[in-house]
Image 1 (cartoon, one colour):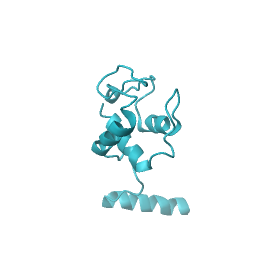
Image 2: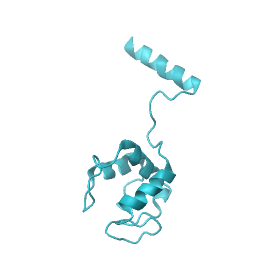
Image 3: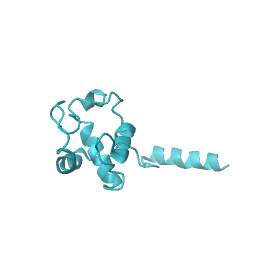
Length: 109
């Protein structure tokens, strides 16, 4: 019964144009650009594939990260949260909204 009621609520919300759950990737790319420039540009080029301290991110919009992984919201969020290879973990350093914004921006590069 609970599943049926949950399905009805989600369907009703969708039909009314009201999002039932926050969609991943609802970030503001312009705000993400500002955050990128203050937190990420020290190590990453946005306009080049050339490596700084970390890999250049130009071309991410074409579907692949420099690591070869698919350029998806989930993969970028995982990279931000966990860091690795010298990149700090940003999981507790920036808010979820800031993460969504910077991901939205990186997906435009």
